[in-house]
Image (cartoon, rainbow, N blue to C red; front, top):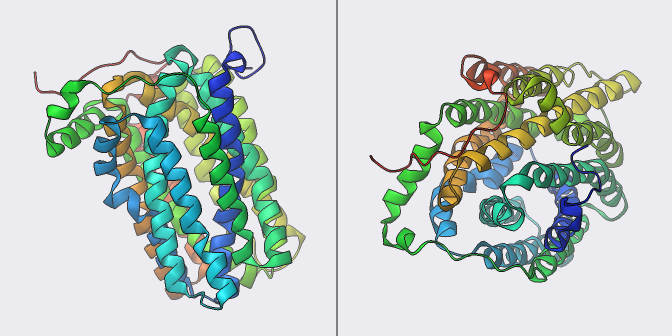
Length: 423
C-alpha cells in the first residue's frame, strides 16, 4: 500500500504532514460548500435549471478566463506565499454569503459573484499547489504524496457532503458555508508553519514575455502525445460531467423528493469508492500499467454515470441507483486523478510546471462552464432526467480520445522532456 507508514516515507516528512493536515481540513470545508452553495440557490432562492447552470458556469469560468495568466505568474514566484494568500482570500469572499443572509440581502446574483471569485482564487491555489508539491516532497515520493492528497479528498467526499446536508437541514445552506471559511484559514496556517525553504524561480524565466511563456505551457501539453490525449479526454468528460452536476441537485430534491441531508449522505456513501480508488491506484498500475489503469478509470466513470438517470421517483430503488452511480464514479475519478496528475508532474521540467498545469487546466476545466450552461438549458428544454442521460453518454464517449492514443501502452512513468522551446 503506497501510503502506509514505513521508514523513509512521507509519514516522516514533517512539512508534508503539516500541508496534508491543513489540506484535509480544507477539503472537508470545500465538500460542504460544493453541496451547500447549489442548495442555497435551489432551496433558499428557488432557482430554475437555467439559473443553476449560470451558477455553475460562474464557479468554473475562472479556469477558462484566468488559468493561463495565473500559470505564468505562478512560475515567476515562490508558490507557498501564493497558497497562503489564496486561502485567506477564499475565506473572506465566502463569508459574504452568510453575512448577506443575516442581513436579508441574499440574491442569486450574489451567489454568481461569490462563486466566480472563489473560483478565481481556487485557480490560483490549485496551480500553485501542484507546482509546489514536487519541490516539497521530491519526484520519487510524488505518487505517494498525490495518493495521500487524493485519499484525503476522497475521505472529505465521504464525510463532507453528509455533514453539509445535515447542516443545511439544521441551520440552512447560507450558514453552513461558514465551516468552509474556517477550513481555508486552517489550511493557510499550516502552510505558514512549513520550514523547508522553497527554491526561487529561475532568473531567466523573468526575461521572457508573457505570451511566450503562455505558449511554452501549451507546447508542453500539446507536444506530449500522453498529455494531448488526456487533455482532450478530460475536457470532454468534464463538460458532460458538469451537465450532470448542474441538474442532479434539482433532480434529487424535486423529482425524487429527497431532503438535503439524504442527498448529502448519498453522495458521501458513493464517495467511499473514491477513497478505495485513491488507495489502490499504485497497486493497480503496478499490475496492469499506468495507461491501462487510466482506460479502466474512464470506462468505469462513464459507465457508472448511466446509473444516475435510472433513479425515477421517490423510494429505495432510486436511492440505491444514486449510491451505486456515485460509488463507481468515485472509484474511476480517483484512479484517473492520481495517475494523470503524477504523469503531468513527472514528465514536465520544474521550471514549466505552473504553465503546464495552467494550460492543461485551461483545456480540461475550461469546458465546465459550457457544461453548466448546457445542463441548465437542457434541463429546462428536455427535462432533468433526459439531461442526466445525455451527460452520461458524453462522459463515456470521452474515452475514445484515450483509447486511440499511446496512453494505453504506457507501463510506467516516462522521463521529463523539455520540449517547450523551439530547437
